[in-house]
Length: 261
Image (cartoon, rainbow, N blue to C red; front, side, top):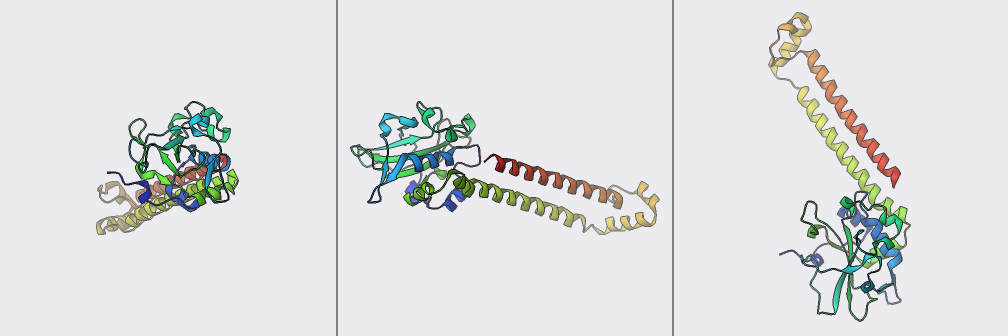
């Protein structure tokens, strides 16, 4: 049985978003969708309750009933409670969403959703907010329970106080840089490992290399296990060149992505 999302860690800070990875990497639209929801769809009253500024039953902005058939969200208490979802860019009225949300409308990127929980008869009160996403490689319409998170109202307040670009800077860019650093660390470890192995040849290889230096003609008759020092240096240079090119490509890709945000 799938664990209720209430039993897992909530998203309460910007750092939680970095760790969870919702709406990332671009061109996924989840972070922009959440920013729109926090700044244009809800407000807080004097009691600290979160109120929706329109009725989701009217299906504005592509809001629709969410059935929770996969049981990734807590069971509703009674028939008066409902889940509503938003974020499907192909749903009727989704064109009402702002351009900064809809500009990433490719089908492969249309996987992020926001789910709200409300009670009938008091449609303005938002009882809970969740972020969910379609499962990678799953069946059509299947959501990923492991990535589903409850959003703390305090995080909604933080987002409301930030500008869009600043919010994206704090989530996407730092995550991209972190990923880039991890890839560079892996490349560095692989290079160190390769270099370490090549710098400690067995005794036979070492003896053959020394003999080659003393007698260049030895290289022509050397057996396959005992490669010449010249060939070994050439191979090391090729490995280093490949690693350098891969590092440069990764750097240019990250810079290109950052320039588009």
